[in-house]
Image (cartoon, helix red, strand yellow):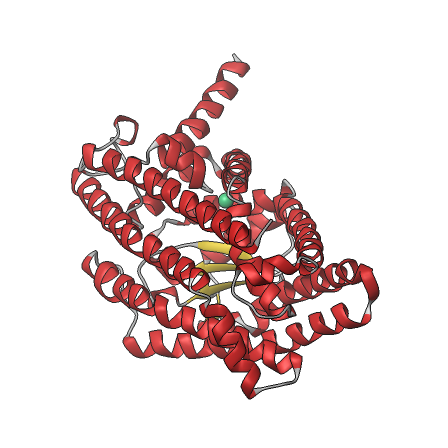
Length: 423
Ligand SMILES: [Zn+2]
């Protein structure tokens, strides 16, 4: 393939990718508009008319933002590739720094900085206009700016040594470097997710142990009953940034913690909170976390292998405007082509994840009661003003969690089956 043909097919794929995303969002938008303010029949008891109006307006406002942000992002990348901007930047950086590792670090660092800079108007608009309009935002500008600085510093502190390690593998380990790199990088990834709750998460939020009381003792009792070991139960000051609420497990092995957003603790009943935690415990018990980790390790092997194959393709560098082959150029190119190349994986992963959600719901309904779980899910949906009317194709393609109506139907259906089985 000539460099022109490679560039053209990449642009065509990126345009198709964008076109499909816009088409699905348009379907979803029309569906939301058609049912604006309408309460789905099955949710009659748990959603008020007023909440349905807010959810439609909020969902549609978020979709309008993505109609603007997605095409702009894709157009910038396509324009930079087509005009040879990446190659020009590379040549400039090469004039400043000669050592390959530092040249690569500076080149990639500048691109990340440019990306953050270009994305910041959308992030500012989303946080301070859209989220504020619907009463969710509690982030102060200082927090937003400080978050950006901290994230950038973490990227530098973690990114520079990892990039150095990658260069060392490519240069020093022979043709099978990608295999060794995949092994070591997967191990580093595991260690990072283990220490994340102890080292990185506290840089952004305050974690306070859940005080003694009935909630704490009931959570401990639930964990004991389900034979689930955790190193602590913490409340996170999520209200510092937004009124959206959530609960999750973090860390691996002995560092595993339960984290409850303060917004969740203040709005949910104890029964509902226990049902949410039982759902999270269900993910562990059904080995979902283990399976996801295994798949992500398999993907890192695939990515390093792809990097090693693509590096030996000289036309590819020329296609994206680079005068000469280099590791940093290939890292950028891999990043650019991986989106369109993994296009069809998104719906497969979403479907897989939704299966896990149904299984965790069934586990939680059995462990903590189906009604408590249903009312917790309805409350979460309500408080996040989540779309009550997702379009079928859109949700099949993107939704990692089934829509509320489908989840409630599955939980209630399973319980009805169980009840009729007993008769
Ligand atoms: Zn889940």
